[in-house]
Image (cartoon, rainbow, N blue to C red; front, side, top):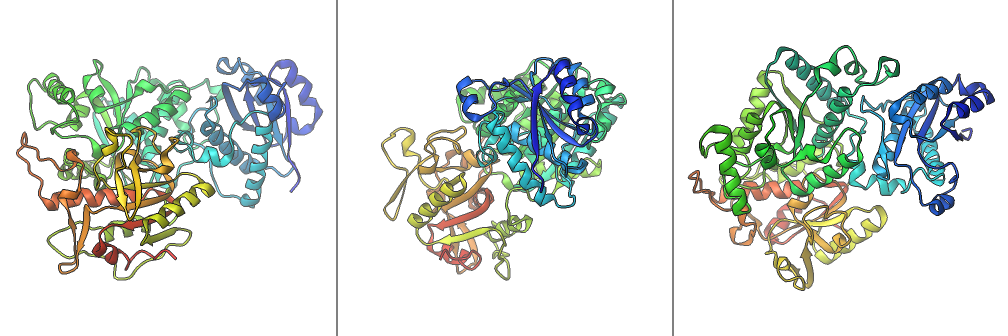
Length: 598
């Protein structure tokens, strides 16, 4: 394939007028260009390091008439501070290639995290076309050239393993994600026009991209609010129609927020919002913050809605007080039947709820019947959007169903386990007899691919919370500690030497997960059922009764939460999942369905 060329010049009228006549392709050929505010005095990585300056803003575009398009950008106030143009030309490029390269560079720049991407979120394209695999090899070469010029600060693997990349709003959507986004927007605009209220549900198993869709929608809505003039309107994008025709006017003054129950995931999303124009960290909040807010929201999106709480003993006395005062403020009295979902409905005109009932992991989470009612109601009003494409696990959607089937939680009847074991191409799924060997393999995978971690159910007390010199988990001479931080543990310096709990990894991806199934979960061969060992489950909030609501949680209730936890842990790995099981009977049962480590 003919080598591409990257030409840099000043982002000024004079710069464009000097460059445009140099080649006919500058005004009549499909090209991709990057606008940034890096100095043109840093054409190599070495000079970029010496200058100690990185672009704080960047914009990526594609055009058949680059000279004209770049001149249009010079009239744009939000790009007036940019200083450098970099045009990527290849005699073999066509429109499809340029759209794909544009998408690739936007995603990489957003994930690099060194600066803010000025592109709006109107539907990044990722379509099949002739010889795409060969062209994408060129994309990596383009990336390397731009990295040498100081535009990128990290390698592609480093970017792809980062939360900024995984949680970026600049994503090429799957078919079912695109259907969901389009349907949600159409419904929302109809409701805004008619002043109706609405509740929309997006339902999907682990790895189907629920969080991605939530963040994507947040970015798209603020971009539609700030839609540019018609002359700067690109009609080639997937959701172009929503950026004109009166839609921006419907969103004027719209107050939106994103509720994220889990602390670690919330902090990671706030990092992304901090880097993304139009989004702000205070848009991301807890259910308590939404309930306490003095303002009413036009729209609240709730990620991991199954983790919203019913009335239950909270993590602190202050949160128990807040639960009561928020309920009193919203409903006039302390109605203990009210949940955080009721707060969300009271504080917003429209709600978009992302959920998977099988990922509820604590008794305080919303009851199953509440989640079932949400799904039923959304279906009846044509506001239910299922996500089915598996984006995380290379083994595909069948793997998630397989894991859930072999961990089916019922104490009163035999497991409905698969009749035959399944194998999954391109996926490294193994059962280990030795924790030491599994730990060694996880370290090896981390050296090869990064983001490989040990995770476990809460089957050992958290000694190191008070005694940093202690060890929490001891198995066959291997001594390990629980995660030393509650936020961003996966990327923390000591993560490879520690074990993450469900609360540090739910909602996140790993390349390889080494799952330790502790003595809290066992197997009764005589009855053919899973069993829970209450005394070996050390999450106090995970098994405490709820006297305020008159609820007690028997072993069959606890088994559902514990098996859900392990199902979540077993669906974190993109490339592979390794398993070690403490209970011998459960290990023998799982050995029928998980290939043994060689």
